[in-house]
Length: 414
Ligand code: SF4
Ligand code: SF4
Image (cartoon, rainbow, N blue to C red):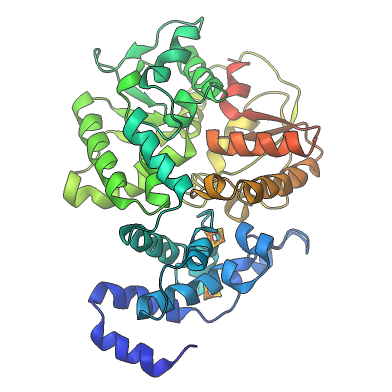
């Protein structure tokens, strides 16, 4: 039970860093903003909610506000990382909705507090077997998907189009950082192929690192393995700066968020990244505006766009994908009820899908239903991980929708 005098005592006794985290937990005033779309933007009662975990379990500890109480008691030393506490800390996709909404008013940053407690759980040796496998995958294969390193080059060999350079051997202006999911998952290589086709069509001088590409580390930070994340960040920052490229482009929302917003937090230790880092939708949008990428055909399709949490709420990239979609003649875009900073998570992120596949799928099906209501035939996004989960949601719910990465739609018209 919350006892103010115990918290005040803790302020005197705890290390300064813990006091800062503790303050965030007691800022929580149980307003509930973290559960819902911001009031003035609420589209309807049905689509008012926004926390995928809370909406599945429908019980206070699973919403951010309840998690804040658990975190407070962990910091005060009144709770330990028991199996139940672990379950509650990890029933979170790190979608960022609670942080975004809470910080509009209260600034308690609940998602950051949850993430910090995951770091501490991991440091205390508490790790789910499913998450341990992700670490084994990295140790043995260099990626969380248990695919050999050479798999990162397979899609290049299968492509008809030539011209992708080896950035390890040749100097190029642009590095296409493919990421593990599009690089090695056989079902997601289509994103790497489509991205490359678009860059080739625009005459971009680009290369890839192929089997020498190193995982960005996003998933390891999400599950609390800060040591592995930092090791990977250090390797990547060093390699990016050695290459002498002007720009790093990635088509993975998770890699984009990690490299664009989390590597810079480590600049004092590992140095700044010298090249500009962008998600492919930003890069392609610039190419279209500068008339360097010509859209040669119409495509008469009706689409809706799913904002991935990683480049949406975590980076703030909302308009470039919409501008690219609207630049394709014939494409009709209809927004879902929840879009942009109020987008609903696909259910895959934060190590959630690995540990709670059934709830991740249930969340994807909810999002697919919302997409169906737009009347669109295609659900478009810009993240291979959303692609995996929402495609499964489409398949399992027997939806009439088809899923496409935005680069796939573009590759057909350039
Ligand atoms: S975490 Fe923030 S938004 Fe959620 S109930 Fe607490 S103060 Fe309100
Ligand atoms: S980050 Fe998303 S899933 Fe996690 S508690 Fe916040 S709103 Fe819920």
